[in-house]
Image (cartoon, rainbow, N blue to C red; front, side, top):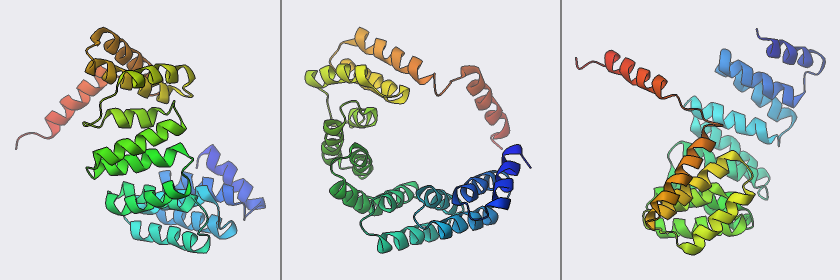
Length: 246
């Protein structure tokens, strides 16, 4: 038993109905031992606090990983039926459907989300990705641009737009991207903006500037996603030895 697990269990000894402690213990248990025990703990947390968003998110994820997505969706549908005005269960349902590659079903939920939270940038990005997967590139571009309109420094939306084959970013987009870099709120968003600028400038033939942004994007990405070329080479070599032709 780890130190963190002992600490959480000690908390539950004196506060057995602490929903956050139950959720945290479930997270530890799911990683080290038992899915059924983790599920029981999460369902207890939800019973104590029926609208515990993180507990629902963890339970949904746990059930989907255990190939029980139908049960996960049923849990969320119960919340949606009980409190139809809430946004978060719809968001969790869309994410669960996306993770199960049920994009057509997910698209209907994404439509509801953008209708009910039209002023929020993130649902428009997710809607755009679903449209892109289904081959509706023009509609996806509209969704990504709506997200950018709401949050001009949204790296996810810019990178989604750049990845659409039918989309070509113009000079105004390049200017907007350069301005967005000045206000990017995270390294992840900053890296995505650099990569998008690299793509846009390359499409316009400005290759020297394009590669500078690719370099900056990769340097920024390494701050949160380190890359070890030798380790990858060794992994590929080991895989080649294991999966021989016979």
